[in-house]
Length: 57
Image (tube, rainbow, N blue to C red; front, side, top):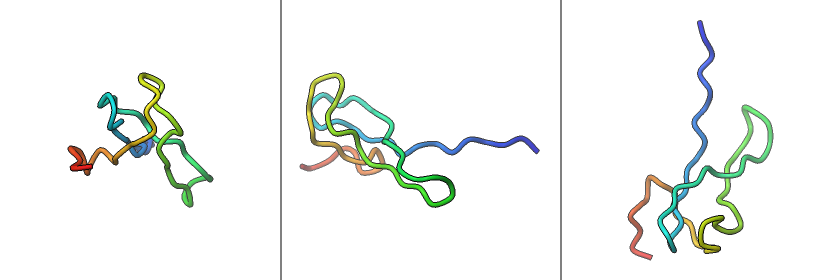
C-alpha cells in the first residue's frame, strides 16, 4: 500500500487572502502547525485557519 503524505494545516492571510501552508513543529505523529509570522505576499500578520474562512475578524 502506498504512503499518502499528510496535508498540512492551511491558513488564509486576513490582509490579502493568500492561502499558505502552516509551519510544522515536531516530528510525526506528535507534530503541530502554526501560521507563519508574516505573509510573504503583503507582510500581514493576521491569519485564520482555512476551515474557519471567511472570518468575521
